[in-house]
Amino acid sequence: MLENSRFAPDALMVNLNNAIWGVDLSPQPFWKAWLILLVRIIITVVRSLGDGQLSMRAMSLVYTTLLSLVPLLAISFSVLKGFGVHNQIEPLLLNMLEPLGYKGVEITEKIIAFVENVKAGILGSMGLGLLVYTVISLMQKIERAFNYAWHVTTPRTFAQRFSDYISVIVIGPVLVFSSIGITATAMNSSLVGKLAAIEPMGTLIAFGAKLMPYLLVVAAFTFVNAFMPNTKVKFRSALVGAVVAGILWQTTGWAFTSLVVSSTQYTAIYSAFASLMIFMIWVYLSWLILLVGASISFYHQHPEYMTGRWEDVRLSNRVEEKLALLAAYLINKSYYNSAESWTAEGLALHLKTPLDAMKSILRALEHDGLLARTSDSPPKLIPKRPPESTNVKDVLDAIRAADEKNNFGPGGLPKEPAVEQVLASLDKAAAKTLAGQTLKAFATADGDAKEVKPE
Image (cartoon, rainbow, N blue to C red; front, side, top):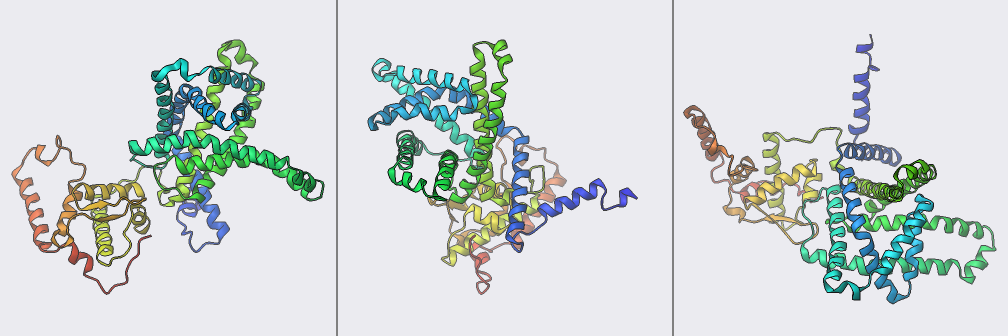
């Protein structure tokens, strides 16, 4: 019967889920492992889009972009003017707004007119300060959006923001337009002209010229993916996300061009606001595509975050206690073996645990003063208290008391003698069992065993 068949809907879903999530990729052929990883990333990113957070942050960036676009271009214009390449801003804007068709030309002309009207002498020191503040606010909002995509909870410090943002705002445009200028000069050189007359070099050069805009888009997206999150991003992961985002951006651009061509009814309805609405929609789609690319980069670098479960991972008390003991054991073992210290990512990968869950455990141990983080990037985990005078029970106590608030802890609950007696007995039994067992003894008990190295 159908309900007992392996082709029943439930059975099909189970088999499909096992084929995608229940396979160990390490022994698989390269093509099969790559294909399964690609499917996992697509499912996870679609799931992220479904919860609406990426879309909400993209919409937030639209508003900030509208406020900051003219000040950002004004600062870039001032810097580029010193290098004599300021005239390339308009062609770049036209290229970015090409999907908007004739409205892109209209919007570009208005933006350039606004930028040319921005003069430091007229603005004064207060106006100039607000101009810079608006641009830095845009950069900060972008960082927050990318930090969310990368599951990063710690933003850059004020000093890092000032130095990093100013570097990008001032040096970034110079590097971008210099590379564009060098590329254009190289393509128009006499040597390239002579090579183009020889086949198949001519065909390859023509193909390269058509491919160059796409490569520049991918290069820009790769830089944004690598720079904006406040974490270390591997170049390969940043590139993977940038390639997918670049393809999505170009494909969406073609579709959007068709929409704009047939948008005469919108012009009739919204009149002068039609150009602004179309521009806002395109900015929203561009930010959403960039954030999707960032999510792809994140899951490519951290595959341990991808699971077949659609709900959030929630750890039981037993699992939390075991993870805490495993983390304390591995960190202290590396400390006494003078081995390389563990990172949160390394522990999550080694213990086959989602990084968010691992970070929650480590935060509890750090809050109770059992762990400390180094200033490395990414931070290494080391003991904060002397392990020879710290009890193993302290680790369990830290996990049991994690996330307890002052206004709602066990002391605020009603006291029943029978309940209090059971809890006291449990604490007394645990203290008696673990009495005198320090973290040093715990981590060095199997000193002859094979050393486990951080991932």
